Length: 124
Ligand SMILES: [Zn+2]
Image (cartoon, rainbow, N blue to C red; front, side):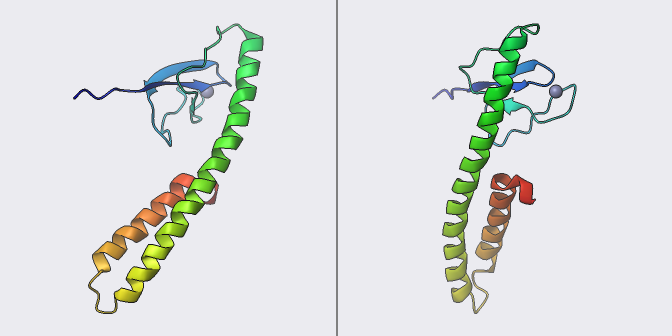
């Protein structure tokens, strides 16, 4: 079976640069000129020509709106995952009087920290 590699367009609207790369969230890619994180535009949006002021202004507005929406979605999803993880952790902690689940608990704590870091970046 062949894995389909999903390429996305990443942009920095401040520098008017775009590049294609494999899609991933959260993205670690940074702009080569200003070092700010690149924004994952998805695969359908067209990149304006470098001199197209109106095109880039519109794109910057779209990205600004998307950033807010995306952060909100990430927080909601993060809240759901944490609620579920916390129930699991609490149950295991109750069963852990003899230390039998220490390893499993340690993994859950690690996972919880990762969820917080990925979904609530401003609190990290
Ligand atoms: Zn930049």
